[in-house]
Image 1 (cartoon, rainbow, N blue to C red):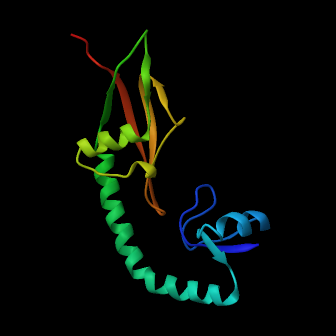
Image 2: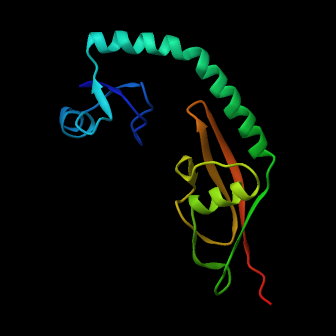
Image 3: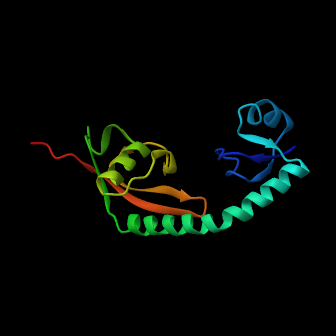
Length: 151
């Protein structure tokens, strides 16, 4: 079954993509929840027209996302965390903590667009986070987890 996505769906595709899914997944989950519509010939024509009209706006969005990406690449993100024995952290560092560190550095990015390798970081060290600013603009951001200084 081919469907047209009405919004981004994790591990499936982006908004306005035409994807093939199993019948049950499309009919019982994606279409009833409003995530997709059936890819009929008329729906494909409407999609094609919409994409033509959106092409100019899309260029501007990609340009803005690229500017933000360049600004983020200049940043050095260090997240301070409490540690226990050795390099183990109390708790963990996740995409929300990276979003807060970026906001403190002056770049606001929603945490749902940030993926930290491994999901949660539980040790000190250097890691990478992937930030998706646009479907065409995805950057790798090096982050460092450092120990909180005790008095």
